[in-house]
Amino acid sequence: MSFGLGAHNRSTYLVWKEGKPPDWVLEVASPSTVGRDLDAKRRIYAEMGVPEYWQFDPQGGLFPLGAPRLQGLALSDGGYEPLSARLMNGERTIRSPVLGLDLRAEGGLIRFRDPVTGKDIRHHDEATADLAAAQARIAELEAALRRRDG
Image 1 (spheres, rainbow, N blue to C red):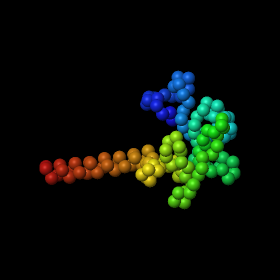
Image 2 (image 1 turned 90 degrees about the vertical axis):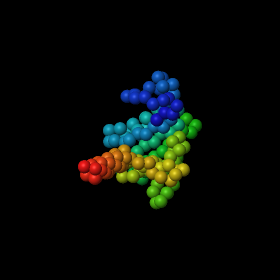
Image 3 (image 1 turned 30 degrees about the vertical axis):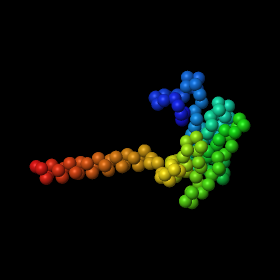
Image 4 (image 1 turned 90 degrees about the horizontal axis):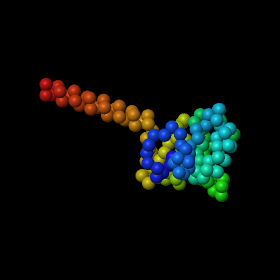
């Protein structure tokens, strides 16, 4: 994610075209990439100057034993230092200074929370379900109006 560049579709983020590195990067671990994510990519993003680098293991078991499934790292003196985690309502939560949001692992997903409002930001699936329910309710009300007027 990069702020201040305007929204446009891109299949690849090219730093030399964009004029700056991303402000926030999330790597989702998989068995084939986890070694690179934890080592080489971490160094590359630090060299590029990416302020925050996040790592997420959606299924668990790919990170070293005892490592949390969601890790937020902030650039400091040319390398990354872990962002502080805290328990919020019994769940391990990390604040992203770049995004201004709290993040936590929730099942195989990352849950974002607005610390100002204290409300979770809905996932795509939740928003899609809400839209489907609203559309069904509209169809129901339209049918009731047709019966009443018909």
